[in-house]
Length: 287
Image 1 (cartoon, rainbow, N blue to C red):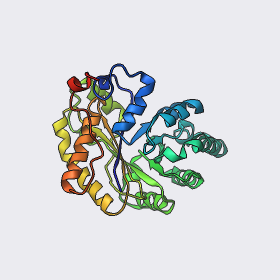
Image 2: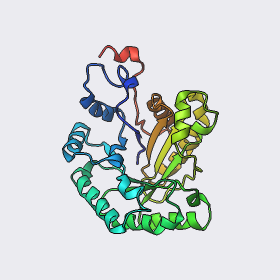
Image 3: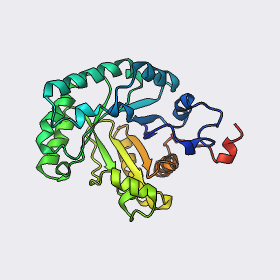
Image 4: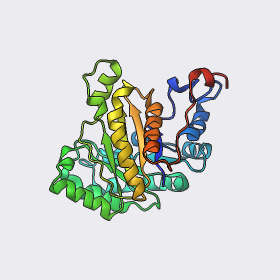
């Protein structure tokens, strides 16, 4: 069992001359990224149809152990309330067909629903889960507060996921909302990231964590300590979690992921570290 770490992207200008040598072309960076991290969130599939040829290029560029976590199209998730079910189902089945050639490198595909999708759509969410036909994990992220009531609705939601062996996506945005927005990146993050309770419940074998870090890195320690303990518990239960680390501007996201990994290693000495980052920009500039 292992923790798979990833970012919300593999392209970031601040990572050049650190994770990537400046001589590496943009198209080659995903291959280099896959040498440091074992997964990535791919949000582009949420916004538009990605050319299967491009998907195949990404697939071919990464190491065999790498896992992509693609987000389902917004026509399936964010239009759940205003589109006919038949059209939604067709788009969902079409997306599965697009992913089929990539199954050997697929992590939990994400159904990410907006805050407008409340408890009235629970049966539709579970019906989409029931339609999933690929032999790879599926995960669901909900943002309406009804799904965090610790009562009837949340219980029904979690039971429905567990029955279908679908993973809950656990959003932890506590760090980024822990202070006033005193810089541009915090203003942007607080305006875009959901502020929902953090309920770290695993409903299947690959729980998914989305951690949104604070730009003052030391402020994250209290939450990273909590996650290190929870991840060790999950590993002890035989689970294989996916952890996607963001920060308010994502520059420091790789550092936060490495810090979390180190905390797990201190709690569980037999744990093999998953992340080894270049020590400094000065060293990597010699590549």
